[in-house]
Length: 205
Image (tube, rainbow, N blue to C red; front, side, top):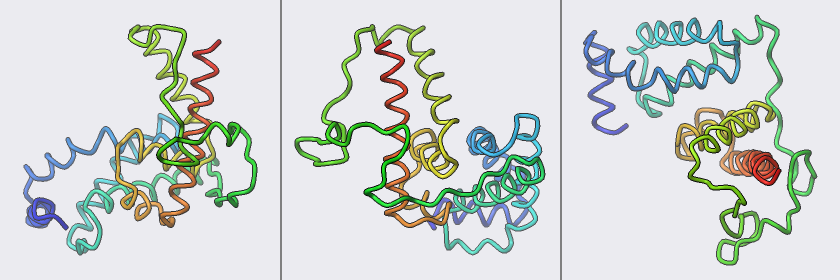
């Protein structure tokens, strides 16, 4: 655990209110976004509040074997999944299909071939017929992306939210969700393909 995180964890164990306030201000927006993957908006704040209660009560048991952030988000995911089950909204965590299996929402694999990076990567940024600097278009495009992410299978939705929305590194995402690095990459790739396809369809309409 980085020194800053270790010091923060120690401050929390001492009951330092400033440390707790810093932690809350740093993570509440992302925790709320993560909670929305599992529960209705009416339950989001309850899930986040319960997460902080568990953090405060359990900080003495935090051993630093994972990042503090990973530990906190792991608590939230467990609470949110239980709440989703109570609300009847749970969907089983989707297993990763084999590399040869076709899946709905994908694109022609021949399009995914970068001259330097190889297969599985887009060869170049898309060229759209509309002005990408348009504020209105940017807002509409973000909404298209948000809807596309929301329609993804649960496992893909979790991974792309953490990697591309929250900016988490791959290893931390794998640790939080309990998936292998290979599975995490596969889920992310498939999610990105589907979201990009939705964005292409919108912008080329």
